[in-house]
Length: 81
Image (cartoon, rainbow, N blue to C red; front, side, top):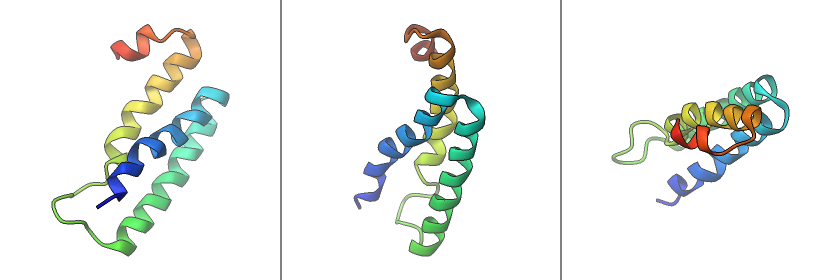
């Protein structure tokens, strides 16, 4: 199935508002993205062997990393995180 390949671009689409404008617009993008993914997940049904959408595992990691990168401007701290 090719849908898990979209998890990385989806994580980038949630991280970009955080990088550009902060946590509030990033949180809104996160909530909207969660609603879209959950609706699609419910509508398409569960793929075999995958219990949780991959974006729900990536987004909680990517959003704090993006905020740390926005505040510090250096890549070392977010990568250590």
